[in-house]
Length: 410
Length: 108
Picture 1 (spheres, rainbow over the protein chains, first blue to last red):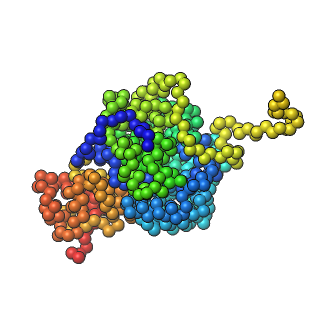
Picture 2 (spheres, one colour):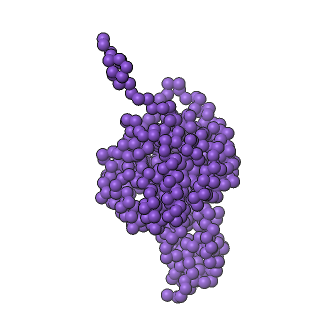
Picture 3 (spheres, one colour):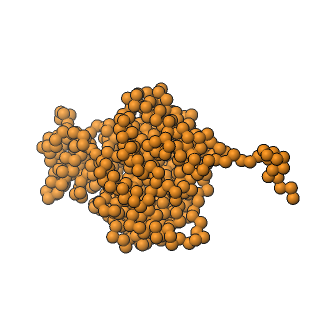
Protein backbone atom coordinates (compact mmCIF):
# COMPACT_ATOMS: atom_id res chain seq x y z
CA UNK A 1 0.00 0.00 0.00
CA UNK A 2 1.36 3.37 -0.91
CA UNK A 3 1.66 5.81 1.91
CA UNK A 4 -0.47 8.78 0.98
CA UNK A 5 -0.16 11.01 3.96
CA UNK A 6 2.61 13.34 4.86
CA UNK A 7 4.88 11.72 7.43
CA UNK A 8 3.49 12.06 10.91
CA UNK A 9 5.06 11.54 14.24
CA UNK A 10 4.40 8.03 15.57
CA UNK A 11 0.73 7.76 16.46
CA UNK A 12 0.19 9.17 19.94
CA UNK A 13 -1.88 7.24 22.44
CA UNK A 14 -5.62 7.75 22.27
CA UNK A 15 -6.62 10.24 24.97
CA UNK A 16 -9.02 9.19 27.72
CA UNK A 17 -12.16 11.29 27.99
CA UNK A 18 -12.34 14.65 26.28
CA UNK A 19 -14.35 15.61 23.25
CA UNK A 20 -15.92 13.03 20.98
CA UNK A 21 -14.34 14.62 17.93
CA UNK A 22 -10.90 13.96 19.41
CA UNK A 23 -11.88 10.32 19.94
CA UNK A 24 -13.16 10.01 16.38
CA UNK A 25 -9.80 11.20 15.12
CA UNK A 26 -8.33 7.94 16.43
CA UNK A 27 -10.94 5.84 14.66
CA UNK A 28 -13.67 3.48 15.80
CA UNK A 29 -13.78 -0.32 16.03
CA UNK A 30 -16.37 -0.29 13.24
CA UNK A 31 -17.60 2.51 11.01
CA UNK A 32 -20.56 4.59 12.24
CA UNK A 33 -22.02 4.13 8.82
CA UNK A 34 -20.43 3.27 5.55
CA UNK A 35 -21.20 3.84 1.94
CA UNK A 36 -21.69 0.77 -0.20
CA UNK A 37 -21.93 1.19 -3.91
CA UNK A 38 -23.67 -1.88 -5.29
CA UNK A 39 -22.98 -1.40 -8.97
CA UNK A 40 -21.14 0.88 -11.36
CA UNK A 41 -24.05 0.51 -13.79
CA UNK A 42 -26.21 3.59 -14.25
CA UNK A 43 -28.87 4.70 -16.66
CA UNK A 44 -27.60 8.27 -16.39
CA UNK A 45 -24.25 9.89 -17.13
CA UNK A 46 -24.20 12.82 -14.69
CA UNK A 47 -21.41 15.24 -15.51
CA UNK A 48 -20.14 15.28 -11.91
CA UNK A 49 -20.50 11.59 -10.99
CA UNK A 50 -18.16 10.99 -8.05
CA UNK A 51 -17.60 7.35 -9.00
CA UNK A 52 -17.38 7.74 -12.80
CA UNK A 53 -20.24 5.29 -13.11
CA UNK A 54 -22.02 4.06 -16.20
CA UNK A 55 -21.12 0.50 -17.10
CA UNK A 56 -21.42 -2.53 -14.83
CA UNK A 57 -18.12 -4.11 -13.82
CA UNK A 58 -18.04 -7.86 -14.51
CA UNK A 59 -16.26 -8.42 -11.18
CA UNK A 60 -19.06 -6.92 -9.08
CA UNK A 61 -19.98 -8.83 -5.90
CA UNK A 62 -22.45 -11.67 -6.45
CA UNK A 63 -25.65 -11.90 -4.44
CA UNK A 64 -24.05 -14.44 -2.10
CA UNK A 65 -20.96 -12.27 -1.62
CA UNK A 66 -23.13 -9.23 -0.91
CA UNK A 67 -25.09 -11.25 1.66
CA UNK A 68 -21.82 -12.25 3.30
CA UNK A 69 -20.84 -8.57 3.58
CA UNK A 70 -24.19 -7.84 5.25
CA UNK A 71 -23.64 -10.74 7.70
CA UNK A 72 -20.30 -9.22 8.57
CA UNK A 73 -21.73 -5.73 9.05
CA UNK A 74 -24.31 -7.23 11.40
CA UNK A 75 -21.57 -8.95 13.42
CA UNK A 76 -19.63 -5.68 13.60
CA UNK A 77 -22.80 -3.82 14.64
CA UNK A 78 -22.74 -1.39 11.76
CA UNK A 79 -26.31 -0.27 12.19
CA UNK A 80 -26.87 1.27 8.82
CA UNK A 81 -25.32 1.66 5.41
CA UNK A 82 -25.69 4.27 2.71
CA UNK A 83 -26.27 2.34 -0.48
CA UNK A 84 -25.53 3.94 -3.80
CA UNK A 85 -23.83 3.32 -7.10
CA UNK A 86 -24.09 3.76 -10.04
CA UNK A 87 -27.81 3.35 -9.82
CA UNK A 88 -28.28 0.63 -7.19
CA UNK A 89 -31.84 -0.23 -8.18
CA UNK A 90 -30.78 -1.49 -11.61
CA UNK A 91 -29.13 -4.47 -9.89
CA UNK A 92 -31.66 -7.29 -10.33
CA UNK A 93 -31.09 -8.46 -6.73
CA UNK A 94 -31.37 -4.96 -5.25
CA UNK A 95 -34.75 -5.53 -3.58
CA UNK A 96 -33.63 -8.88 -2.24
CA UNK A 97 -30.46 -7.36 -0.73
CA UNK A 98 -32.51 -4.56 0.78
CA UNK A 99 -34.74 -7.08 2.58
CA UNK A 100 -31.72 -9.18 3.53
CA UNK A 101 -29.97 -6.22 5.15
CA UNK A 102 -33.04 -5.09 7.05
CA UNK A 103 -33.61 -8.66 8.22
CA UNK A 104 -30.06 -8.65 9.61
CA UNK A 105 -30.30 -5.41 11.61
CA UNK A 106 -28.48 -3.36 9.00
CA UNK A 107 -30.66 -0.42 8.07
CA UNK A 108 -30.43 0.87 4.55
CA UNK A 109 -30.47 4.39 3.22
CA UNK A 110 -30.22 4.26 -0.53
CA UNK A 111 -29.64 6.95 -3.12
CA UNK A 112 -31.38 6.68 -6.43
CA UNK A 113 -32.21 8.81 -9.42
CA UNK A 114 -35.72 7.39 -9.12
CA UNK A 115 -35.74 5.39 -12.33
CA UNK A 116 -37.25 2.26 -10.72
CA UNK A 117 -39.50 3.91 -8.14
CA UNK A 118 -42.89 3.29 -9.71
CA UNK A 119 -46.08 3.20 -7.64
CA UNK A 120 -45.63 -0.47 -6.73
CA UNK A 121 -42.07 -0.04 -5.46
CA UNK A 122 -43.02 3.16 -3.64
CA UNK A 123 -45.82 1.29 -1.83
CA UNK A 124 -43.41 -1.53 -0.97
CA UNK A 125 -40.91 0.96 0.48
CA UNK A 126 -43.62 2.73 2.46
CA UNK A 127 -44.48 -0.61 4.09
CA UNK A 128 -40.85 -1.37 4.96
CA UNK A 129 -39.45 -0.18 8.25
CA UNK A 130 -35.79 0.71 8.61
CA UNK A 131 -35.28 1.87 5.04
CA UNK A 132 -34.60 5.41 3.90
CA UNK A 133 -34.71 6.66 0.34
CA UNK A 134 -33.00 9.67 -1.08
CA UNK A 135 -33.73 10.94 -4.55
CA UNK A 136 -30.90 12.81 -6.23
CA UNK A 137 -31.78 16.16 -7.72
CA UNK A 138 -29.23 18.80 -8.64
CA UNK A 139 -31.52 21.59 -9.73
CA UNK A 140 -34.79 22.90 -8.34
CA UNK A 141 -35.85 23.35 -11.96
CA UNK A 142 -35.55 20.94 -14.88
CA UNK A 143 -33.34 23.43 -16.69
CA UNK A 144 -30.68 23.54 -13.99
CA UNK A 145 -30.92 19.85 -13.06
CA UNK A 146 -30.91 18.35 -16.52
CA UNK A 147 -27.86 20.28 -17.67
CA UNK A 148 -25.82 18.29 -15.14
CA UNK A 149 -27.80 15.06 -14.75
CA UNK A 150 -29.24 14.69 -18.24
CA UNK A 151 -32.44 15.46 -20.11
CA UNK A 152 -35.48 13.89 -18.50
CA UNK A 153 -33.76 13.20 -15.18
CA UNK A 154 -35.71 15.96 -13.41
CA UNK A 155 -39.02 14.48 -14.58
CA UNK A 156 -37.91 11.01 -13.43
CA UNK A 157 -36.96 12.30 -9.97
CA UNK A 158 -40.20 14.25 -9.56
CA UNK A 159 -42.28 11.23 -10.59
CA UNK A 160 -40.45 9.13 -7.97
CA UNK A 161 -41.07 11.80 -5.32
CA UNK A 162 -44.76 11.91 -6.23
CA UNK A 163 -45.01 8.13 -6.01
CA UNK A 164 -43.32 8.07 -2.60
CA UNK A 165 -45.52 10.85 -1.24
CA UNK A 166 -48.67 9.22 -2.59
CA UNK A 167 -47.69 5.87 -1.05
CA UNK A 168 -47.42 7.55 2.35
CA UNK A 169 -43.66 7.03 2.64
CA UNK A 170 -42.26 8.92 5.63
CA UNK A 171 -39.00 10.82 5.92
CA UNK A 172 -37.72 10.33 2.41
CA UNK A 173 -35.03 12.71 1.25
CA UNK A 174 -34.21 14.92 -1.67
CA UNK A 175 -30.45 14.88 -2.06
CA UNK A 176 -28.74 17.84 -3.69
CA UNK A 177 -25.10 18.39 -4.57
CA UNK A 178 -24.55 22.13 -4.25
CA UNK A 179 -23.05 23.64 -7.41
CA UNK A 180 -22.40 27.09 -8.78
CA UNK A 181 -25.56 26.67 -10.87
CA UNK A 182 -27.97 25.64 -8.10
CA UNK A 183 -26.47 27.43 -5.08
CA UNK A 184 -29.04 30.19 -5.56
CA UNK A 185 -31.91 27.69 -5.39
CA UNK A 186 -31.60 26.56 -1.77
CA UNK A 187 -34.93 28.09 -0.76
CA UNK A 188 -36.56 26.64 -3.87
CA UNK A 189 -35.16 23.20 -3.00
CA UNK A 190 -36.53 23.54 0.51
CA UNK A 191 -39.98 24.52 -0.80
CA UNK A 192 -39.99 21.69 -3.34
CA UNK A 193 -38.94 19.18 -0.70
CA UNK A 194 -41.54 20.46 1.77
CA UNK A 195 -44.24 20.14 -0.87
CA UNK A 196 -43.64 16.38 -0.91
CA UNK A 197 -43.41 16.14 2.87
CA UNK A 198 -39.80 15.11 2.35
CA UNK A 199 -36.54 16.21 3.94
CA UNK A 200 -33.80 18.17 2.19
CA UNK A 201 -30.24 16.91 2.19
CA UNK A 202 -27.49 18.99 0.63
CA UNK A 203 -23.89 17.90 0.17
CA UNK A 204 -20.67 19.26 -1.13
CA UNK A 205 -19.42 18.85 -4.72
CA UNK A 206 -16.07 17.09 -4.75
CA UNK A 207 -13.55 16.93 -7.59
CA UNK A 208 -13.85 13.12 -7.54
CA UNK A 209 -14.58 10.84 -10.49
CA UNK A 210 -16.02 12.84 -13.37
CA UNK A 211 -16.48 15.62 -10.83
CA UNK A 212 -12.83 16.44 -11.47
CA UNK A 213 -13.66 17.36 -15.07
CA UNK A 214 -16.32 19.88 -14.12
CA UNK A 215 -15.12 21.07 -10.72
CA UNK A 216 -13.56 24.31 -11.97
CA UNK A 217 -16.82 25.20 -13.65
CA UNK A 218 -19.27 23.95 -11.02
CA UNK A 219 -17.80 24.40 -7.56
CA UNK A 220 -19.48 27.26 -5.68
CA UNK A 221 -17.84 30.67 -5.71
CA UNK A 222 -16.45 32.16 -2.52
CA UNK A 223 -19.52 34.40 -2.21
CA UNK A 224 -21.82 31.40 -2.71
CA UNK A 225 -19.93 29.54 0.02
CA UNK A 226 -20.51 32.47 2.33
CA UNK A 227 -24.23 32.58 1.49
CA UNK A 228 -24.45 28.81 1.93
CA UNK A 229 -22.84 29.09 5.35
CA UNK A 230 -25.37 31.71 6.48
CA UNK A 231 -28.19 29.64 5.03
CA UNK A 232 -27.00 26.58 6.94
CA UNK A 233 -26.75 28.52 10.20
CA UNK A 234 -30.37 29.61 9.73
CA UNK A 235 -31.83 26.40 8.30
CA UNK A 236 -29.31 23.81 9.44
CA UNK A 237 -31.53 22.12 11.99
CA UNK A 238 -34.05 21.07 9.36
CA UNK A 239 -31.61 20.21 6.61
CA UNK A 240 -29.30 17.21 6.43
CA UNK A 241 -25.76 17.72 5.17
CA UNK A 242 -23.94 14.44 5.78
CA UNK A 243 -21.64 16.78 7.73
CA UNK A 244 -20.03 17.50 4.37
CA UNK A 245 -19.63 21.27 4.70
CA UNK A 246 -17.38 21.30 7.74
CA UNK A 247 -14.79 23.33 5.81
CA UNK A 248 -17.27 26.23 6.06
CA UNK A 249 -16.95 26.23 9.85
CA UNK A 250 -13.80 28.31 9.42
CA UNK A 251 -16.11 31.26 8.66
CA UNK A 252 -16.75 31.42 12.40
CA UNK A 253 -19.41 29.51 14.27
CA UNK A 254 -19.15 25.72 13.90
CA UNK A 255 -21.87 24.03 11.87
CA UNK A 256 -23.91 21.30 13.56
CA UNK A 257 -22.50 17.79 13.15
CA UNK A 258 -19.07 16.27 12.95
CA UNK A 259 -16.54 18.87 11.85
CA UNK A 260 -13.82 16.43 10.92
CA UNK A 261 -12.73 14.36 7.93
CA UNK A 262 -14.14 10.93 8.80
CA UNK A 263 -12.25 9.05 6.07
CA UNK A 264 -11.06 5.69 7.39
CA UNK A 265 -11.90 6.88 10.91
CA UNK A 266 -15.69 6.72 11.13
CA UNK A 267 -16.68 6.13 7.50
CA UNK A 268 -15.42 4.31 4.42
CA UNK A 269 -16.59 3.02 1.06
CA UNK A 270 -17.13 -0.50 -0.23
CA UNK A 271 -17.20 -0.27 -4.02
CA UNK A 272 -19.12 -2.63 -6.34
CA UNK A 273 -16.16 -5.02 -6.74
CA UNK A 274 -15.61 -5.16 -2.97
CA UNK A 275 -12.69 -2.75 -2.80
CA UNK A 276 -12.61 -0.75 0.43
CA UNK A 277 -11.63 2.91 0.12
CA UNK A 278 -11.18 5.49 2.87
CA UNK A 279 -14.23 7.43 1.71
CA UNK A 280 -16.75 7.55 -1.15
CA UNK A 281 -14.94 10.52 -2.66
CA UNK A 282 -11.57 8.82 -2.73
CA UNK A 283 -11.84 6.10 -5.36
CA UNK A 284 -8.13 6.06 -6.16
CA UNK A 285 -5.48 3.43 -5.54
CA UNK A 286 -3.78 5.65 -2.96
CA UNK A 287 -6.84 5.35 -0.73
CA UNK A 288 -7.50 1.66 -1.32
CA UNK A 289 -7.27 -0.24 1.98
CA UNK A 290 -8.17 -3.77 0.81
CA UNK A 291 -11.02 -5.88 -0.50
CA UNK A 292 -13.90 -7.59 1.28
CA UNK A 293 -12.99 -10.77 -0.65
CA UNK A 294 -9.57 -10.87 1.06
CA UNK A 295 -9.00 -13.20 3.98
CA UNK A 296 -10.51 -11.68 7.10
CA UNK A 297 -13.09 -9.82 5.05
CA UNK A 298 -14.20 -6.28 5.67
CA UNK A 299 -13.52 -6.41 9.40
CA UNK A 300 -9.83 -7.08 8.87
CA UNK A 301 -9.56 -4.28 6.32
CA UNK A 302 -11.27 -1.83 8.66
CA UNK A 303 -9.34 -2.80 11.77
CA UNK A 304 -5.93 -3.72 10.42
CA UNK A 305 -5.17 -2.01 7.11
CA UNK A 306 -2.04 0.09 7.15
CA UNK A 307 -3.74 2.90 5.30
CA UNK A 308 -6.54 3.26 7.84
CA UNK A 309 -4.04 3.09 10.69
CA UNK A 310 -2.22 6.01 9.08
CA UNK A 311 -5.42 8.00 8.73
CA UNK A 312 -6.27 7.48 12.41
CA UNK A 313 -3.98 9.99 13.98
CA UNK A 314 -4.38 13.71 14.42
CA UNK A 315 -2.66 15.97 11.95
CA UNK A 316 0.22 17.68 13.70
CA UNK A 317 2.17 19.28 10.86
CA UNK A 318 1.52 21.22 7.70
CA UNK A 319 0.49 24.77 6.92
CA UNK A 320 -3.05 24.42 8.29
CA UNK A 321 -2.06 23.52 11.84
CA UNK A 322 -0.67 27.04 12.22
CA UNK A 323 -3.97 28.64 11.17
CA UNK A 324 -6.26 30.16 13.80
CA UNK A 325 -9.23 28.33 12.26
CA UNK A 326 -7.66 24.87 12.24
CA UNK A 327 -9.77 23.63 15.12
CA UNK A 328 -12.91 24.65 13.23
CA UNK A 329 -12.27 23.05 9.84
CA UNK A 330 -9.41 20.61 10.55
CA UNK A 331 -7.95 21.34 7.13
CA UNK A 332 -11.06 20.37 5.20
CA UNK A 333 -11.65 17.51 2.79
CA UNK A 334 -8.85 15.07 2.00
CA UNK A 335 -10.36 14.04 -1.34
CA UNK A 336 -10.86 17.63 -2.48
CA UNK A 337 -7.20 18.39 -1.82
CA UNK A 338 -5.93 15.21 -3.40
CA UNK A 339 -7.81 15.47 -6.68
CA UNK A 340 -6.91 19.12 -7.13
CA UNK A 341 -3.25 18.29 -6.67
CA UNK A 342 -2.87 20.02 -3.30
CA UNK A 343 -0.82 18.63 -0.40
CA UNK A 344 -2.95 16.70 2.09
CA UNK A 345 -1.65 18.64 5.08
CA UNK A 346 -2.33 22.00 3.42
CA UNK A 347 -5.54 23.95 2.88
CA UNK A 348 -8.71 22.67 1.24
CA UNK A 349 -9.08 24.08 -2.32
CA UNK A 350 -12.25 25.80 -1.13
CA UNK A 351 -10.72 27.07 2.12
CA UNK A 352 -13.00 29.90 3.16
CA UNK A 353 -10.07 31.93 4.47
CA UNK A 354 -8.72 32.10 0.93
CA UNK A 355 -5.66 29.90 1.49
CA UNK A 356 -7.03 27.34 -0.97
CA UNK A 357 -7.10 29.79 -3.83
CA UNK A 358 -3.53 30.81 -3.27
CA UNK A 359 -2.50 27.18 -2.97
CA UNK A 360 -4.23 26.39 -6.25
CA UNK A 361 -2.56 29.35 -7.90
CA UNK A 362 0.83 28.24 -6.58
CA UNK A 363 0.57 24.79 -8.15
CA UNK A 364 3.18 23.89 -10.72
CA UNK A 365 2.02 24.88 -14.16
CA UNK A 366 2.83 21.44 -15.49
CA UNK A 367 1.27 19.65 -12.51
CA UNK A 368 -0.93 16.78 -13.60
CA UNK A 369 -3.69 16.31 -11.04
CA UNK A 370 -4.05 12.69 -9.84
CA UNK A 371 -6.61 10.80 -11.86
CA UNK A 372 -8.31 7.58 -10.81
CA UNK A 373 -7.72 4.67 -13.14
CA UNK A 374 -11.15 3.37 -12.21
CA UNK A 375 -13.59 4.66 -14.78
CA UNK A 376 -16.85 2.97 -15.72
CA UNK A 377 -18.23 5.89 -17.72
CA UNK A 378 -20.44 5.02 -20.66
CA UNK A 379 -18.32 4.88 -23.77
CA UNK A 380 -20.96 5.71 -26.32
CA UNK A 381 -23.62 8.42 -26.29
CA UNK A 382 -26.30 8.11 -23.60
CA UNK A 383 -29.94 9.04 -24.00
CA UNK A 384 -30.47 12.50 -22.56
CA UNK A 385 -26.78 13.12 -22.04
CA UNK A 386 -26.00 16.18 -19.85
CA UNK A 387 -25.44 19.29 -21.90
CA UNK A 388 -23.11 20.99 -19.42
CA UNK A 389 -20.07 20.08 -21.48
CA UNK A 390 -21.75 21.03 -24.75
CA UNK A 391 -23.97 18.97 -26.96
CA UNK A 392 -22.53 15.53 -27.66
CA UNK A 393 -21.20 15.47 -31.14
CA UNK A 394 -22.13 12.69 -33.48
CA UNK A 395 -18.93 11.08 -34.66
CA UNK A 396 -18.27 11.94 -38.28
CA UNK A 397 -18.60 8.83 -40.34
CA UNK A 398 -16.68 8.21 -43.43
CA UNK A 399 -18.98 8.72 -46.43
CA UNK A 400 -21.29 11.18 -44.62
CA UNK A 401 -20.47 13.94 -47.02
CA UNK A 402 -17.85 12.75 -49.39
CA UNK A 403 -16.78 9.18 -49.93
CA UNK A 404 -13.26 10.27 -49.08
CA UNK A 405 -14.05 12.47 -46.03
CA UNK A 406 -11.73 11.90 -43.11
CA UNK A 407 -9.71 9.26 -44.88
CA UNK A 408 -5.99 9.72 -44.75
CA UNK A 409 -4.92 8.67 -48.17
CA UNK A 410 -1.20 9.12 -47.70
CA UNK B 1 -20.08 18.68 27.18
CA UNK B 2 -19.20 16.85 30.37
CA UNK B 3 -16.69 14.03 30.23
CA UNK B 4 -19.24 11.48 31.29
CA UNK B 5 -21.87 12.88 29.02
CA UNK B 6 -23.80 11.14 26.33
CA UNK B 7 -23.78 13.19 23.18
CA UNK B 8 -27.42 13.65 22.27
CA UNK B 9 -28.16 13.05 18.60
CA UNK B 10 -28.93 16.26 16.76
CA UNK B 11 -32.60 17.10 16.64
CA UNK B 12 -33.62 14.50 19.19
CA UNK B 13 -36.52 16.29 20.72
CA UNK B 14 -38.47 13.08 21.19
CA UNK B 15 -40.37 13.30 24.44
CA UNK B 16 -39.05 10.56 26.69
CA UNK B 17 -40.23 10.35 30.29
CA UNK B 18 -38.73 12.86 32.69
CA UNK B 19 -35.73 11.35 34.40
CA UNK B 20 -36.05 10.44 38.04
CA UNK B 21 -32.85 8.77 39.30
CA UNK B 22 -34.64 7.21 42.25
CA UNK B 23 -36.73 5.00 39.95
CA UNK B 24 -35.72 1.70 38.33
CA UNK B 25 -34.42 2.06 34.75
CA UNK B 26 -33.02 -0.15 32.05
CA UNK B 27 -31.39 0.09 28.65
CA UNK B 28 -34.30 0.42 26.25
CA UNK B 29 -35.19 -2.88 24.65
CA UNK B 30 -34.73 -1.59 21.11
CA UNK B 31 -31.32 -0.16 21.90
CA UNK B 32 -27.96 -1.78 21.17
CA UNK B 33 -24.58 -0.80 22.59
CA UNK B 34 -21.48 -1.25 20.47
CA UNK B 35 -18.25 -1.19 22.50
CA UNK B 36 -15.71 1.39 21.38
CA UNK B 37 -12.27 2.25 22.80
CA UNK B 38 -13.64 5.34 24.54
CA UNK B 39 -16.96 3.88 25.67
CA UNK B 40 -19.76 2.84 23.37
CA UNK B 41 -21.90 3.77 20.45
CA UNK B 42 -25.61 3.61 21.24
CA UNK B 43 -28.16 2.87 18.58
CA UNK B 44 -31.94 2.90 18.82
CA UNK B 45 -33.49 0.61 16.22
CA UNK B 46 -36.88 2.25 16.62
CA UNK B 47 -36.16 5.93 16.10
CA UNK B 48 -32.76 5.27 14.43
CA UNK B 49 -31.01 7.76 16.68
CA UNK B 50 -27.35 7.42 17.37
CA UNK B 51 -25.60 8.50 20.53
CA UNK B 52 -22.33 7.91 22.31
CA UNK B 53 -21.34 6.96 25.81
CA UNK B 54 -18.14 8.79 26.52
CA UNK B 55 -16.75 6.69 29.33
CA UNK B 56 -16.47 3.00 30.05
CA UNK B 57 -17.99 3.53 33.48
CA UNK B 58 -21.06 5.04 31.87
CA UNK B 59 -21.28 1.95 29.65
CA UNK B 60 -21.25 -0.26 32.74
CA UNK B 61 -23.86 1.95 34.36
CA UNK B 62 -26.22 1.69 31.39
CA UNK B 63 -25.68 -2.06 31.04
CA UNK B 64 -26.34 -2.74 34.73
CA UNK B 65 -29.24 -0.33 35.32
CA UNK B 66 -31.65 -3.26 35.12
CA UNK B 67 -29.92 -5.07 38.00
CA UNK B 68 -30.44 -2.35 40.58
CA UNK B 69 -33.49 -0.88 42.30
CA UNK B 70 -32.74 2.64 41.04
CA UNK B 71 -30.42 4.60 38.80
CA UNK B 72 -28.76 6.10 41.89
CA UNK B 73 -28.14 2.65 43.32
CA UNK B 74 -26.55 1.69 40.01
CA UNK B 75 -24.15 4.62 40.23
CA UNK B 76 -23.14 3.57 43.73
CA UNK B 77 -22.70 -0.05 42.67
CA UNK B 78 -20.55 1.01 39.71
CA UNK B 79 -18.29 2.99 42.00
CA UNK B 80 -19.04 6.42 40.53
CA UNK B 81 -17.40 8.90 42.93
CA UNK B 82 -19.83 11.19 44.70
CA UNK B 83 -18.33 14.27 43.03
CA UNK B 84 -19.16 12.88 39.59
CA UNK B 85 -22.69 11.67 40.31
CA UNK B 86 -24.37 14.85 39.11
CA UNK B 87 -22.62 14.56 35.76
CA UNK B 88 -23.72 10.93 35.46
CA UNK B 89 -27.31 11.77 36.40
CA UNK B 90 -27.28 14.41 33.69
CA UNK B 91 -25.90 11.94 31.17
CA UNK B 92 -28.64 9.45 32.09
CA UNK B 93 -31.27 12.17 31.81
CA UNK B 94 -30.02 12.88 28.27
CA UNK B 95 -30.28 9.20 27.46
CA UNK B 96 -33.80 9.06 28.87
CA UNK B 97 -34.81 12.04 26.79
CA UNK B 98 -33.58 10.38 23.61
CA UNK B 99 -35.30 7.12 24.71
CA UNK B 100 -32.05 5.19 24.97
CA UNK B 101 -32.97 4.10 28.50
CA UNK B 102 -36.49 3.41 29.72
CA UNK B 103 -38.32 3.00 33.02
CA UNK B 104 -38.75 -0.56 34.27
CA UNK B 105 -42.44 -1.14 34.76
CA UNK B 106 -42.08 -3.90 37.31
CA UNK B 107 -39.17 -5.22 39.30
CA UNK B 108 -38.79 -8.24 37.02
